[in-house]
Length: 64
View (cartoon, rainbow, N blue to C red):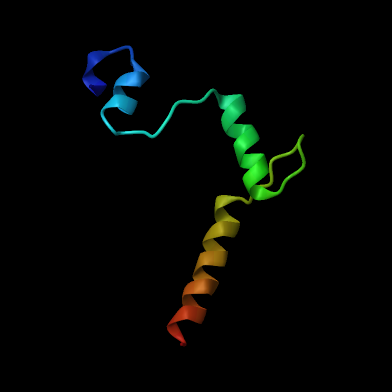
């Protein structure tokens, strides 16, 4: 499917590759709700911060 050129995204839904289709603004609104952010701002962390958090979590998990 990826080699066909212009993507018909419904094919990916029908084929089970994705669960649904949304526009970017719909995705952003969903993420704002899920992260508890204000309606006008998406809460996020940088990849670097996430990496440090995961390292700390892994160190704590290995001590149990």
